[in-house]
Image (cartoon, rainbow, N blue to C red; front, side, top):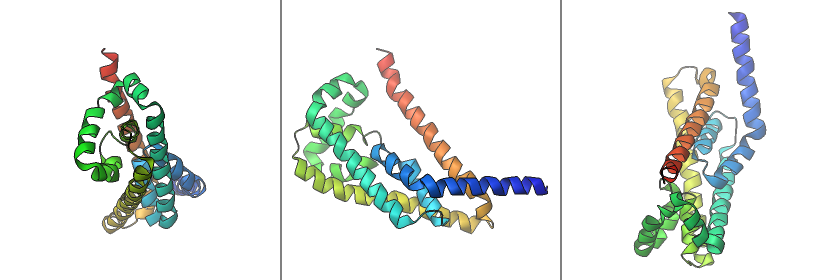
Length: 201
């Protein structure tokens, strides 16, 4: 029994050390592309005192805004070729163009919240010929809203869990692993779903 508790404590300490050492780097790199799951986990870790929520929000803002700007510039440079090359992006183009024609401000502010458009959206927007300065201004605001909202969701999830569980610290490593694994499974499912129609051609 003592050996089991000692092993559990050692595992928890190891995960905490990994989060403390590489958590901020994971937030920045993860949010360059999508990163919602990593950001939720980081928000939870911030509630548990493993990370500073202000640094998490700042890095998520930086990663999210830079990642979307790079995708936008890529779309501006080779957008038509990319859309033609990747049917999964081409399928998103009519939806993005329709939203762009009616609500271009709202689209840019919310594109990272829209399912399936986090990467495809900025590429298609870049290909549309939208001025770079306008995209940067609106994308910066959108990235700030996204970073704050998703980090806050993870943080308050931790707060809610603390109300339900008497000893939440005992389960914090399992929750962190569960969030990351769930995100990885969801990402893999989306990737396979996006490729399946292409493979059927």
